[in-house]
Image (cartoon, rainbow, N blue to C red; front, side, top):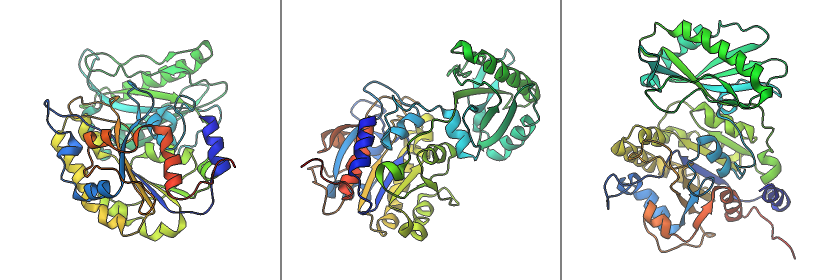
Length: 404
């Protein structure tokens, strides 16, 4: 895949059409009963259906067949980086997204507040999704923790999430998650995955010990877990690889983080409604060539097992699409980073629906609706996630011919 990035460097044009990549997080779904619709198929989405009729459909395998991806690797794939080559932990993504600079040698982790029972076992991995106004003061409390020999910096992310950075000499990020990924089990210690990470793991375990003492009397957020221990990945940048000025519009810091790591600028906007997000494009439309738009609640509703709620989020995005289309993008891709079926309440390995709309340049197929079954039959076929960016570049007339 490094060869594919080199090919994009070689072939990209600095001029061409504008590309919008609209990612509804966890878009892919499943029927709740045999023969029923998926969340996308159940949603009333006339605008997406029209785009499907005029465009072309397919489906994406984010990492590899049968592999359920995390959001970080899945987005890297959509951006054209093979996540099996470029491995980034969740910690550096969250930390970068909230403005914590992760330099060479720093180690970052993403934290979750959780609810523990009297035996110290996890009853709720997300502490009831406590709101930001309840979680932020707890993060401030944790900022007072001191560990000899290193400097810890903690910053609130959103709701029950926080980011933690450790800075010091000879640190190593080869540490296993403390989240057992299930309820009924106790949080795990930070365990070194290599001998050279033993001292770093000990620093994090001391920080955890002090944090647990500060949280012990909280009714909901009386515990925490850490995951995604990582450091600066030093990724190639979008302007170098694709020759485009790229911008990200997302609300959740993790997605801002992965965008910044590949060289995108971040454009802030207020409010979570897709119509507000799409309207925020207008004043910056002439400044950029590539626009990454991220919608989170599809994934959240899927993890909650809320089939109807996930379908409703899709309908809200669909209703806002005319405002986006008024800007006349040359290429619009609508997809997800992974599947999060409400029936499974978690990320899954199922292929993700993909729609590419590019007036005058797309070869339309026979499908007339945007849904999993239609996408499985679509003219684009089943693609690797890393193959999406070259397709978008080609549809925007931003690639030269290869060879004589």
